[in-house]
Length: 309
Ligand SMILES: NC(=O)c1ccc[n+]([C@@H]2O[C@H](COP(=O)([O-])OP(=O)(O)OC[C@H]3O[C@@H](n4cnc5c(N)ncnc54)[C@H](OP(=O)(O)O)[C@@H]3O)[C@@H](O)[C@H]2O)c1
Image (cartoon, rainbow, N blue to C red):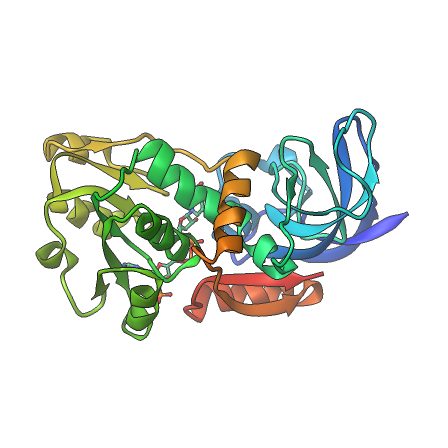
């Protein structure tokens, strides 16, 4: 049996994607085959296709794109207790398998049950972005109740969830976004929304405990002065460790978000309670994956872009 999938055969810039039939996954011990309803679009997808995502080298090609999804279990492998055909699940999966396909193999440690009342597109949009915001703020940044935090790119896929996690922890939140998105990030819980094109965030956000940097480059360099002595900058990109040390602040070495079923389950509970919401900027069909990538890269979407499969 075959299924449709979005594959990359060689790294090119701009990316070259192929929508093609590949062998359907078969259940392995400790895994389930999931029929994908929604896969999300993340910057890692085009970075991978362009050969700019270090963990995926030429030796891994061809690969199926996509790191997160929601769907239903179609087949259960041996030794997978507690899961049945028809269960609604979502997952953040390892790069070795791809979510932008009709079916994908998901391991026991990646499977998360979707609570009743949460739509598949919400559950499918969440996993990678939510785990990045969660691990960045709480695991790497050790964000605590009531701290002062600056979140860059606060209207983006990762940033809009980070704002809401910091709000949940009663933090004082400064958030950068473009002018059209300022009301949106205030509505998510930012105390101070800063137009990154019109204002100098370092003049407004000061004495911070944590900067959550989703931009790198000049934005990261200008962020070090906003931290209080000993404060921490957590970047989703490459951190400048020498600059952090020169400013008397901390940073964490380059990291990549990883699947964490318990934390993702916690986030889904926050969504079910209404504490966190997921903004879907636009939906595309799997056949329109190239248009989805173009839209996500150039049209300033608010929140997440998803593929309905
Ligand atoms: N380390 C990891 O594991 C990990 C995981 C996920 C993501 N990432 C990386 O983190 C970055 C963000 O990911 P994402 O999914 O949130 O991307 P995204 O959805 O494209 O969001 C990026 C946001 O940044 C905003 N922005 C652009 N220039 C800015 C500036 N100078 N100052 C402040 N905000 C600015 C954009 O606003 P406008 O569109 O209005 O300009 C957009 O809302 C990407 O580079 C991604 O590769 C890393």
